[in-house]
Length: 253
Image (cartoon, rainbow, N blue to C red; front, side, top):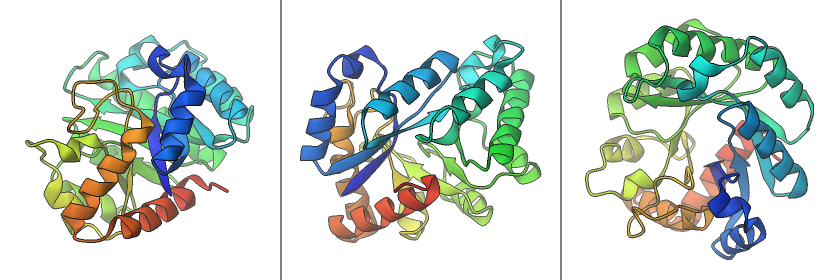
């Protein structure tokens, strides 16, 4: 059994055929999925999907790309969404993105910290995005309280992975570990089996040999196979440990 810890199932490429997406995922051993919100609208969509399917859970949050456009009452709206369903298991996708910088850096920092505070008050974990912002992310995480934190789509180096793990942060690896130019192999190989989980980030980042196509949860098995190869363990061991880690982190039944 595998758990896809980061999906965006509300995109039309999957939402319009969601039953088929779930069935194909199941056929490839992916039995549970976390649908990740990136703004108020998508967070609400995540909850609707999770309420309709027993094996899907939801998060609510504001992505750094969208942080400049949040309404004044966005924290209240997120609070209401988080409290509206028992299927909401985290606040996210929050974070910092200095690669595209679609929102001003100060706004990104402010909105991330505010959402961390909300998650802490709700006793929920956080799922965070980090692109070209290792130092800034680390300072925010080090200086603000959180119950549990997950580094989504980890693509940094071993040194930064160790710094996050020292803060008790769980690492998530996606399809980019299958790319020829992957920069995160050393980190994956060095972590213990208790320190990471797996994700597709679908419909983005399809693994090799499907790179460039629409990604889906069914491809998580390919990512798990690559993780097993890099770690020098069996696929069964990867499945057992990453599933246990995900269930513990998100408090899944």
